[in-house]
Length: 160
Image 1 (cartoon, rainbow, N blue to C red):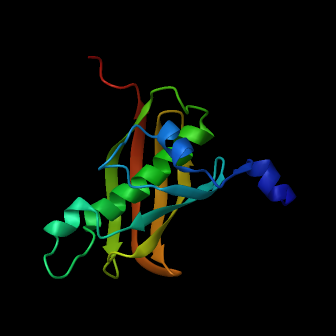
Image 2 (cartoon, rainbow, N blue to C red; image 1 turned 30 degrees about the vertical axis):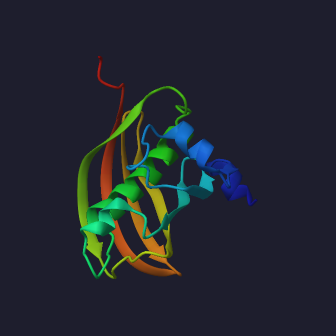
């Protein structure tokens, strides 16, 4: 690890599905991160979503030509960002939630079909205690398939 990396934060990973579920409240069918390859605290995350034909959305999107909906690709990027934020801010297991506030510049370059590993790469653009900005890119075999910038708020869950 370089001195620059040590100055920015420590590296975690790989993180298995148990650690992913400890950081996120999402569960099937909305949990869209299967594994974290690398997480550089206070900087970035690289995570994986294994896209399989068993995903419920493929039944209707589209019959005969299954394509992962773009909004779910952005959601997967946001979930990776949520893990990055929760781990970087030391909030894992705290019950805090990460809520979308804005999505900007979303672009979809290639369809995402079943049978691929979708690599989710997200970096902090700005980090504060309750509002963070991120830049995310989704790749398949190194090629960009989608990208977006987004803002999220970290808050307590609603009271019952």
